[in-house]
Length: 459
Ligand code: FCB
Image (tube, rainbow, N blue to C red; front, side, top):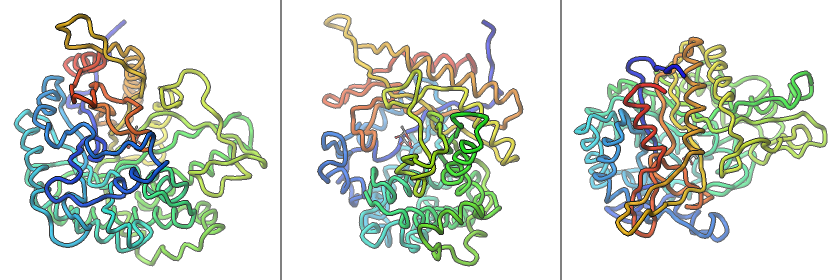
């Protein structure tokens, strides 16, 4: 097979998030986050797992960075834990929290790895949640102040700043169906959260720019929505509704078009959107330099008057049926369909042209196990299914670049096995296996495969 080469300067990397890997939940003045509270609430997270220790990355970051260097990563996307910087979410910064990210940043730069920062990957300070969290407009302002504080310390060394990770999840899973922290189940709260997250993004972009940040963006998890039947008008309407709730409600205001009328009309059936104030849409539309896309699987829907709808899609009951995945699936039960990534990238190029893209997450959970080949073995993990997954998605990304999509990089989710939110530690997404009892790291076969991809800049 002929070799597929990616553009020069294509960014190859891996991604993680603070609560999922750091542990050290009480070190150096860190305050509690909504995930500390949620994971301690019985029945919320699989087997009562918490992020208290996780991969102990807070203490092992130097070794983890050495491993990234060994794998040849050009970039590393990590998130900053807001409760380490402002234990109560507002007010004076905790210098020891900033010191950690300072050390991490320097360790990455020493190894020639470009740090890509996410300011918010879901770990809201609990003190802010006690005042309404993202349903409270003030949280957006606090977020911008926090962003400025972090940038003030790290802005001299970090080029690429992303404000939020997947605000869809924060809003709809956090406040809509309650599957994620803070576990609220209220459609109106979910839509207020969507707006305040977007407003927080806009205010943070403004603060980052004022501080001189070079590249500023946001990461979304856009749905690649497909109709069950390509010829059905009802299915097309279901696609439009779901696309509105997951994609256009974020993308249109972010790109300056304001909230789409059909989405506002849908939202108004559940809540009067008085939280949208004059001037907000202008703030949200602050220009960005990069859009991060997290893609795992497509979403198939049908339009049905008796449809059960989706708990993460308020107002879809009695209109939409979400179809179960058919064909090969990952350990999450998510369909493995690389062509979905291609369709998604094409859609961005067509509907939101001129916006440079980066795949900021893509990967698969599989039931990996470490094989010990003898008493002196350091262990190995034969994760051919993950290699297939990554290979398929990289081929789809490569083809999209060939069709003219402005894709700048690819970050695998994830560097390490980690705390997979409500699933706890039972789902493994890493290219590096983590034994949670010993904290031993074992690069899986996929890590060695990825190392080769990076060194050849292709497949
Ligand atoms: C994404 C999250 C990330 C990880 C993957 C599997 O939605 O951003 O933290 O949990 O899913």
